[in-house]
Length: 108
Image 1 (cartoon, rainbow, N blue to C red):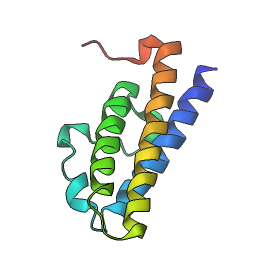
Image 2 (cartoon, one colour; image 1 turned 30 degrees about the vertical axis):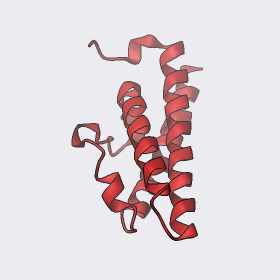
Image 3 (cartoon, one colour; image 1 turned 135 degrees about the vertical axis):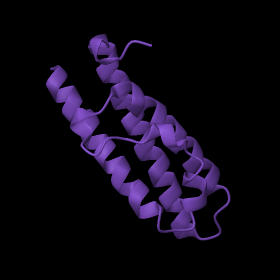
Image 4 (cartoon, one colour; image 1 turned 90 degrees about the horizontal axis):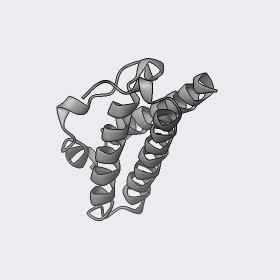
C-alpha cells in the first residue's frame, strides 16, 4: 500500500539523516557541506516530500562518493560508502513512492 511505501521511505530517510549527523563529526563534514542548503530534509521523515528526498539523496550520494575517494582512513572511507548506499536506498524508496502515487509530487 501507499502508506507502507511511505513508511519504508521514512525509514530509509531516517537512517540517512542519522548517518549524515554521525558523518558531520568526522573528516567527511567538509564534503557534506557541499550539499545545497535548499535540500534540507524535514525533521519528521514521515511528512517528507518524496521529490525533495530524491534530490537530497542524489546530492548526498554524490558528496559521499567524492569524499570516499579523498579519505585516508579506511574507517572514514567505509562511513562515506555506507552513507552513499543509504542515500541510494532513500532515493529508490522515494522513486517507488512517486511511481505508485504521483500525487505526492508538488507541482513544479
